[in-house]
Structures are given as C-alpha cells and as structure tokens.
Length: 107
Length: 211
Image (cartoon, rainbow over all chains, first blue to last red; front, side, top):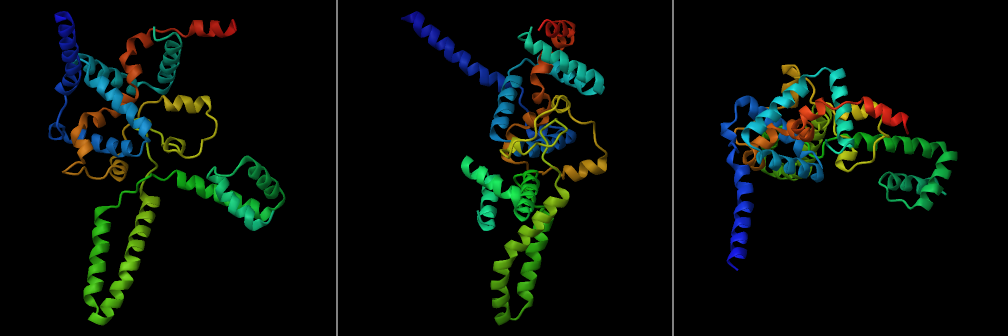
C-alpha cells in the first residue's frame, strides 16, 4: 500500500515537473530585444493566419522545445543558423539526406 | 438545362456543394454553352483570388481613426435637421465605406499569408480552401526550404508594421514561441542535424535500382 502511494506521489511530481521545466526558461515580452520583438510580432501575425491544426503542431513543438535543457536549445539554434545559411544546393542535399534518414526510421 | 440554373450550379460547384450527378450535368451544359463556360472560368478565377487573401484583414489604426473623425466632422458640420438626415445616411454608409477602404488596402498592401519561416505564401489548402495543383518535386523542395534571406528594410517595413507597445495576450504570454517559430518549423531536422548530415544517400539509389 505504502509503495503504491509512493509511486503515485512520484508520478504526480514527475507530471508537475514537466510543465515547470517548460516554464523555467520562458521569457516575458519585455525581456525580448527590439529585434526579437519585431520578429515575434511578424511571426505572430503569420501564425494567426494558420489553420488550427498547424497552430497546434507549433504549440506542441514549442512545449517540447521548452522542455529541453538550455544547452540543447542553444544547440538547436546553432543548427538552425547553419541550416539557414546553407546555399540552395547544400540545402537540397541536406533535405534529401533528411528524407533518407526518415525512411530509415530516424537512425 | 437552362443557363440560369447552370450559373446557379456553377457557384455551388465551386463551393463543393453539388452532387456528382449535377456536376456531370453541369459539365455537359458548360461544354456546349460558351456563355456559361466563360462564367465558370470567371467565377473560378475569382474564387482563386479570394482564396489567396488572408482570413483577417488588419485595418490600419490611422485609416480607421481618420474615417471616424471625418464621419464625426461631417455630422457636426451640418445643421440639425440636415444632420439628422446625414447622420442616418452616415450610419448606413459609414460601415460600408470603412469596409471598402479596408478591402482596397488589403488587396493593395497586405501580402499573401506566409507560413512562418517557409518563405512561401500559405496556400488556399492550408486555410481550408480548395486543393492546389499536384505537387512537383521542385515544390516539395521549396516546402523544406528555410526562411527567405533577410529582406530589404523598405520591404520589411511594408510587411511588418510597427510592433505594438502592448502586445496581444497570446503573444505576451509566449513570446518565445513566436521568436522561434522558424526553428520550430524545422524541429525534427534541427534536433537530429548531425545524424542527418552523416546520412548517406548512395545506398538509397542502390535500393531503388534493386526495386
């Protein structure tokens, strides 16, 4: 009985820790730089025009992103910069590799 | 079938509300009636044009304020009896004037909706509109493309008006979501970036050749 209660408490703590971890690195609007505010505003207006299904997809991914450790978030930002700076041929090759990687089941 | 019926059915057909049997009958009529054929082409073009408009047209605050100020000034400037007539007239026409101005501004200044980071307008399908033409490999490649390179300042100003001092609640609540929207669009790729980079595509060609 005690073990069951302990497991239940542990499960509740873990469930609460997820959102808490997600909120840990959240910033306020005022903490954004003017350039970030401009980008956020621009993207917000685009987001408003997306169908609900696509908005939900972004919301889910954002939760996953917020749940990552800061260094992992930073690594993804750096990867995005690398991805963004690729010339069209390199990007096409990367996307081909990505399709291949997906076909192999992400291995 | 009479042309009158056919033209009623043309609009219903574009909305996808016509039964298959009627679609067939309409097609037969349109095939031999040039007037209805022209009508169908015109309606289809209009439908496509409307499909590219954003769902919500943002009314510039300045235009709204200017219009309302002019309405008030016009109402104040007239004598009482005339003012009552003008007032009634304005009540009826002011919303139409404002709506027309907004539509004109939308058509002239609002760019097509963009999927964040896609560098490509959101299609009618994405907003629940009619299905687009079948995708080509080129189109697929473009969908994977990251955001377009930074635009010139003048163009950026046109597409992104001044950031409000008091942002909408949704934006204020999760600003990082919107800052990182292009990144979130490519979430999977960026999370496994290194693994993808080391993936080879050579054996894929081998797989294809082996059937």
